[in-house]
Length: 172
Image (cartoon, rainbow, N blue to C red; front, top):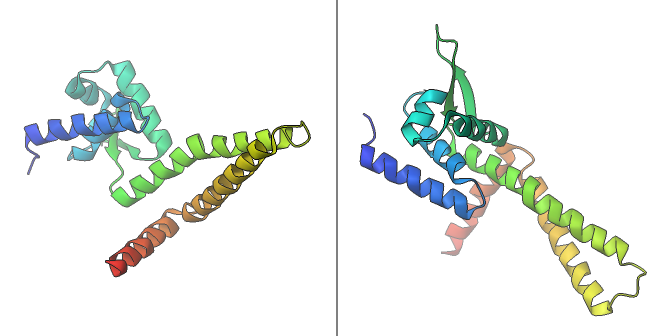
């Protein structure tokens, strides 16, 4: 049974707005939402028409989503066009998004703080500032190590999430 059109449009717009808050292009998030609520793979023309965006914009959004690993390219028998569908498993989708966010945001922060520490080692900087950066480095390195262990594989990440979820439930 097809999703109610009003509910579908509300989800697409809400997901697009949330994507914007997370630093993801609104159009990319809207294309992702459309593919998540679609019952069948959609082609480029279907996506641009449904979302009222240009084919070029839709194409760039699809490329970005494929790079994130949250959509897949599909073929329809007898049709030469490419079609796209969302990753079926929302946990896998979530983990891939977290992995990409780590690569784009945490990794550069870790590198930046490492460089500041290395470059300020003997430059006469204020000891309090150096101590603050040392603590920041320690915190970021800890977060990075945890993230790398957590994100080693989709299966490891799912197991870790399940474990954390059970720990929270036990506390309640």
